[in-house]
Image 1 (cartoon, rainbow, N blue to C red):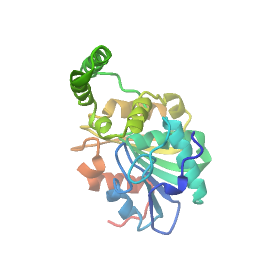
Image 2 (image 1 turned 30 degrees about the vertical axis):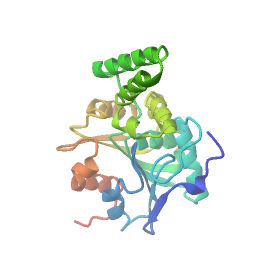
Image 3 (image 1 turned 90 degrees about the vertical axis):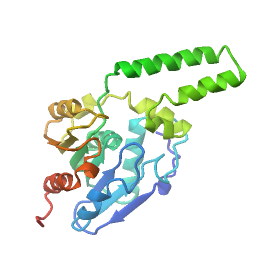
Length: 256
């Protein structure tokens, strides 16, 4: 990874005082506040650490095109820098990629994991995505042949073809997004030793339930739970149920 990333500039919130720290890793476009519905209640019993990963929140963008493993190394180095040697992890979507990488590469550092709507398996492209790719490539072809206002209109049309995450991202983060979504972590999942809870909203269209079931088959010590009436953000759609599942998995004291 790029070794000159300013680790001290990673935005973070540390709360609570006791027990094995719980690290919260947000999804794409998230920040330290994304999983407050989980981190704040848990902080009453455990130390919690919420990060804005590089390129999100107020954490600076990487200066190079990072992949998932660069994020793994950056977070691992940040944890060491701040004295966190053994952690539990609660992660969502893109954050799940990083959690999987940490659990695989540094198994002695990760105790338990929760993967919520986690990325890590490559999604097959739908016909709609293929059409968008064809249009984008056609625009690139014509853009090389024309100049001026017409080319500007073509490029503006192309910029609207991307996902909301891609459209909102800076140029370097767009390249990073394009890279990480193509990275397959199935091999690493097979070697994970951490006890892992897989939580999926039944209506998740960003990372379909079938991918969660596949992860359950790949990760040895895992439990797969589907949350009704929830989509890709079950901690927002069904916060009480999501918190209960995470609370029980982390073996926190019964309070209700």
